[in-house]
Length: 162
Picture 1 (cartoon, rainbow, N blue to C red):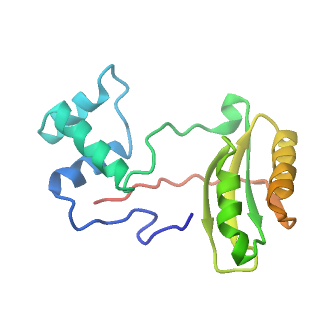
Picture 2: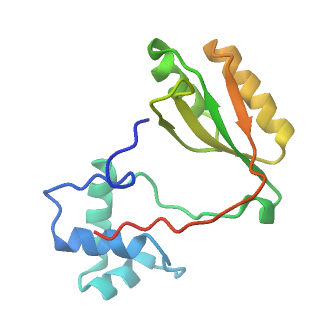
Picture 3: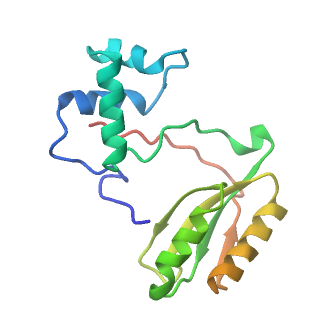
């Protein structure tokens, strides 16, 4: 639930240069090939098995949260919104676990503010998002949830050079 220093990437001192090279490579332009980890292995000078072993270890340790595509919701017929909620401290864990059960939630994080939990939601329609927010309220008892759909989108690239 909490973000980490350096833009959400934990820098683990036990990572070696090959780990860092793999992480740098998989962040953007992930190979769309039948064996993407073999392509990455060639680029970083190792074997496919070694890349798979290291990626598995980095995922298990929490350094890699997920590997997946990012899509522009509107171009695939979906809508997205930013949400925030006023969550009492004693309900933060329950709220985060509940929010994370919805497949359209891409991430959530804590902020030091009265509206302390923020998350993004993607769904087929804004009505589905509103229904899901009502379900979150019902399951957690948290009633102050704001739905803040974007009126203008600015896309920035998030890549962390290790």
